[in-house]
Image (cartoon, rainbow, N blue to C red):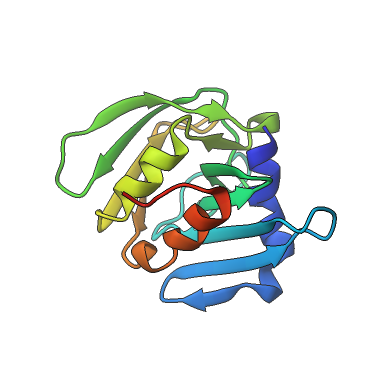
Amino acid sequence: MKNLVVIWALFVAWPVLAQDGNWHVLEETNAMDGKKEVYLMLFAQNEVAGLFSPFTPVLGIKCSNGQTGVGVTGTGMLTFSGNVRVKFDNAAVAREFWNMGSGGGGLISPHAITLARKLTKTKIFLFEFSPVNHAKVVVTFDVRGLDKHLGKVAAACGWKLE
């Protein structure tokens, strides 16, 4: 649940995000404990139907409080099901169950580090979910360039890229 709050916080921090290609990067140090926090954010290539209007989902990867998180969220994303399908480039489609963010406003991978590592070897990541009051939608993320930034998340959270 806390992961979604952090991803939403990226919208508040938008003016201080650095952009490299399609990826937006925020690095800061927590004033309370001195721990480094890193947030990576990527907007989808397409809009999808939201509860009230279309919106562009966001793929977020972060290290905060020593915890790694990967989630998909957006200002109009409301879902009551964590059943998703994912596809990495031309690989077979995989069904997964992702945790719902607080209030149903996003979905969070239960295998954040594994997913983040896999995304560095991927060009196009497809993500299918079911928004409230709409048929399933497919979101397209061009994740190229993640390999330039994921090391910052790994270092801050104490894990290796490989």
